[in-house]
Length: 179
Image (cartoon, rainbow, N blue to C red; front, side, top):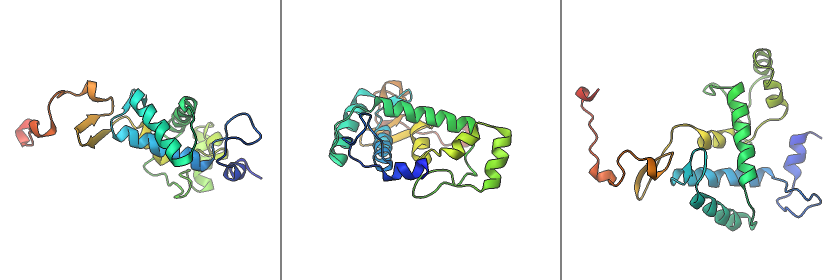
């Protein structure tokens, strides 16, 4: 049985034999979905959730899964996975992902060529990172969230260039002379 198959068999119940919490694929994806939603709401700063974002994550995670858990370590793990992925594959525009798992889905020959260039890719092939599209949304450098209160840059409201103005107050200059 492969590591991925064991992972897929794991339960969403953290009270299993192990004293260490086991993140099932369902829980891990739910965690990422909530984090991405919090980022869209503007509750994200410097590649991590704000205090409000963490509180919302905890409440939503409990609502969805019935688990009250601290998630700081999980987000750190996901950050390290993303960094590893970006070192190996800095441009993912030509990479295909499995719809169900979000893992890289490329032919064996593609992997072999990549491993020749970057030996670290072997680890990525043998231990695939799940939900890469969600992880990319979470840790992408440029993000603007739009909500009821207008728009926010990914670094949060305190870093907005037009702080204090509503979206209606900002006139966008779209004339060619502006360039």
